[in-house]
Image 1 (cartoon, rainbow, N blue to C red):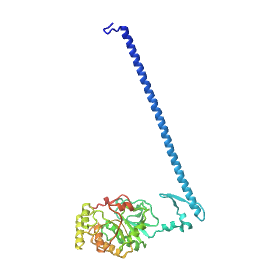
Image 2 (image 1 turned 90 degrees about the vertical axis):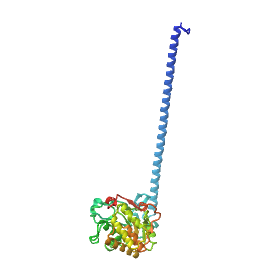
Image 3 (image 1 turned 60 degrees about the vertical axis):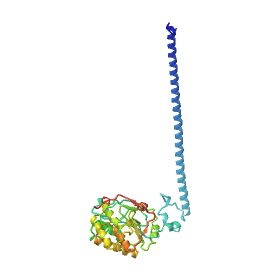
Image 4 (image 1 turned 90 degrees about the horizontal axis):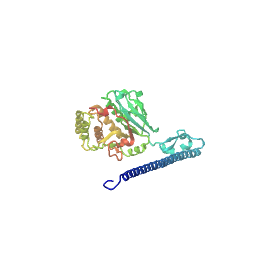
Length: 368
């Protein structure tokens, strides 16, 4: 017997009792773990079934929705088909706005007599022009394919082989007699920019109510209501629409300095431009316009005189290949007041609204 009065036999019995208790507790814990695992597996199974059910319902909704759209298109096709005189099935094509009429249907008497046809007849004869002149095709602005509005014409004027161009533009080679006396390719490009109206009339023998010009890395969007812009342009006696320069709306002299800073032309050339402006008493606060995109009426006599005067000074004095400072002077001299594109507060907003962009060439149009 030990000091606590516990016999050896009792000690051995207590040891076995404690061991059995440990085994029981361990067994109980194992059972709890197994129950927890079973519960988690059952929970995951239920959640998986719920997800599958939800996905199935989504797929069912998508199928039902697609069927509903298909049924609407079928009924719409049958409705229009019923309204035609001959009752034949009409071909349709899917467009951004849903079902649109095919060219074959547009030839039917029903369509010609409808309000839709009359609404689609353009009010004005319009063309879009751009110009790319270079020594090599690899240097130029990237031009590509785009959606055309078949009511309008699209001309790209160039000195390069037209077969090099893979584009939607109708590529036209400019005759050499119009270019031989010009200083370089930049001046050749400006010929189309400011005298394209004359070339179109005298060489292409075409007449237009409005011409939209854009730089070579841009192309017009097909869904713009261009007639509305022509309406706005026509409210001016000079019938030209442009956007004000976003940073230098009233500072032609400051623009000359910024041209040097941005390496668009040399300091020598811009000093010559400033001297010319001062010599002709050009005010400091005349309006400055962007010439990246603009539209005009090529038949406006007042505007024709201003464009001819610009080209005569630009091509003979060769003060600078930059056209914005000289054009600001010409507008002031001839009292040309362009209609301003509405709500244009930041640079290139008007380009984003009316035109899409491609990659610029000519080292991002840096020439110094």
